[in-house]
Image (cartoon, rainbow, N blue to C red; front, top):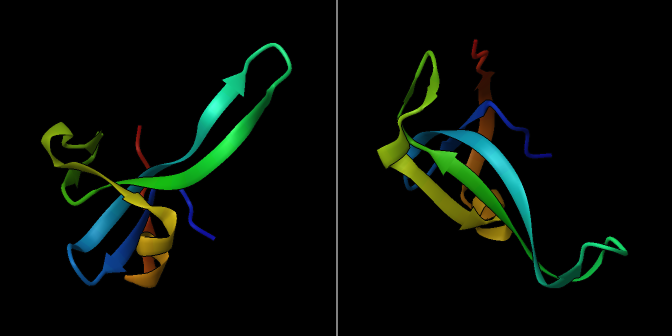
Length: 80
């Protein structure tokens, strides 16, 4: 399972911090909370400090690609 605020080792970027996991819909009806699901993306960054992401370093990758090119969990980061 991919977890937010967790650092993973990734073959292409080295250490990356997961910022979030986002579901994308082709269509979505906010009144019924139903939609036509499309994909899941993982938002990551390869540069961060004690406050979190350094904004110029944010990346988005499809979940499948992230899982295939990611190794073990290295650590969980705590941000204030």
